[in-house]
Image (cartoon, rainbow, N blue to C red; front, side):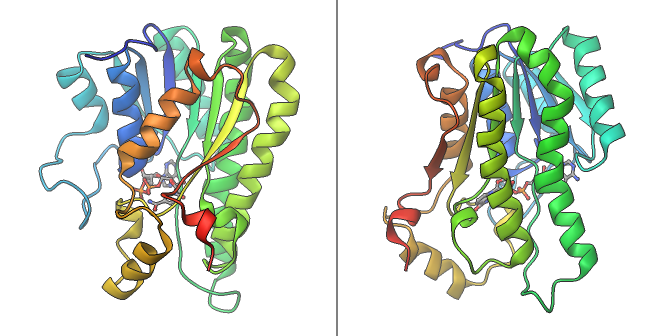
Length: 261
Ligand SMILES: NC(=O)c1ccc[n+]([C@@H]2O[C@H](COP(=O)([O-])OP(=O)(O)OC[C@H]3O[C@@H](n4cnc5c(N)ncnc54)[C@H](O)[C@@H]3O)[C@@H](O)[C@H]2O)c1
């Protein structure tokens, strides 16, 4: 039986078309929220980890299967105008914003020499600028609601080896979380970060069996992460049960960070 702990709240999830964001959107809908799904396209991604029967856009599933209000807004989180449009369409439809989940993200392989300047700018633009821009334009409404901001970074924020752009963008997101926490605490807005380890989503499609095996070894628990693992923590962080959790970076990584090799 769903808890309905987010009943009547409006939750904006970026990158909701796929993977972790899609599951976060479902989780909040299950808890009674109206969900705004913000991605460049609402086509669900496919890939080796994704259910082959996923054909319907996230917002359609929320309306049809969860019986909750949902809106898709085509959004490029790295573009200030596009983010302003996301905020105004959300407010026009639902009257405000209670929760923002900054989940949209990209990954490119490469070291400092093989990473092009364009790839660097693109990744930082989505993962870091996108988090800042969505927060910047949504904060006036979230303050009014005394709501929540949840940023999805990565366990790679505090280790090297994933390439410069991903490493820098995720580290930036973690410290941006702390800065926003300092700014917004007095307004009773909770700001927190989730740092996932290896989660089975299309972003991992580039990995071959050998590198997946290395991730299995790095993960202490005897399984890899599922999008649901992150979604459960996001819904908890935005709930009353977590009302004194603020400025935190929560690892949802099966022990990855405890076991750095
Ligand atoms: N899957 C993992 O193992 C893992 C681990 C650590 C952190 N993360 C983080 O979790 C987040 C979600 O990743 P995922 O694994 O679900 O990947 P995914 O590829 O399945 O989903 C990424 C989402 O971001 C969206 N997106 C990309 N560029 C965008 C843009 N410019 N504007 C709006 N939306 C855009 C995509 O459309 C998609 O909906 C990312 O920030 C990623 O860095 C994932």
